[in-house]
Image (cartoon, rainbow, N blue to C red; front, side, top):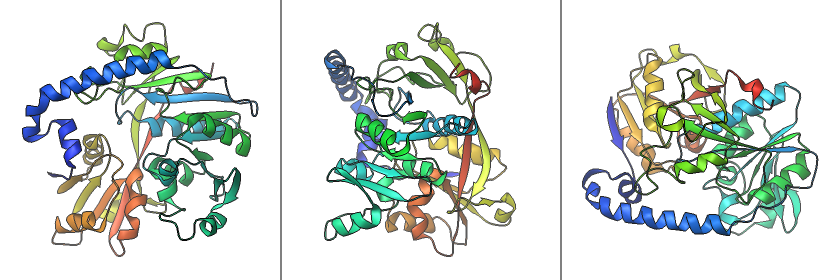
Length: 372
């Protein structure tokens, strides 16, 4: 399989790709400065009281590394478990790269798929907001507003609030949905928000990456931050063994293990598609995620042998030029396969082409003990 990397300069610097590896000393120095910043920020934090609207529990789900620990699949698994138990659940997520984040506003998606927005202190439907925003730059509906992860929750019929302000997002979710549980996606670092259960996800293969802070490594916090967790879930685990370099920092914690299982292929509307539809077709992969290698291994594990995999940066905002690169990778009529996070961003660019997404689910064998 041929790999094509379409990374911007900033990410190449971050990853130390090619000759950028020579900038290692500068990256190390910046990591030291970042560590000092974390210490100052930690000392200045004051924990806020829990939200007072409604009688619900707040569960934070997050990680220490910059992406790639499986937060969204685990959050989906926990939400699905609680909903099957008859509990009302809502998810609050930052909405990375979304219009909600850029404009600093709250956006919510109710179970029937209708989008509502907070505008001038009140909640209004997206159709009304479009009138209010008429003439202003930017779209106010769809994935541009919700972001890629928010759109996944929306597609699974899970009530979701997209808000860069976690405290406000919790209040909005409590007001709109009256849930029993609010799940905070990617909120482990937000110690200013009080939670009832703090879940830390660590990759079983590399719990703390290379143990270095960004940009010298991939850690957003030092490994010692694991001590704040109430529960540690080791993701992408093949067994029930705690990785040696995580044993000390997770001692005394409730430990669970999660594995990621491929559940199949879906089209742009979320409908299941059989693998037989790929028979006789060349397959081209593309993805804008933190760890494209995992996506590529999942595809080959299904018995699919792609000819090319095109890698973009995490949360990449696709353009016509990107699609031209994909089409230029083959002289025939291939099938294009991407992730669930990416397919909703690009399906408007593909008409007659076969465009599919790989659906991956997190399986947590002892999930019933999570709230016990």
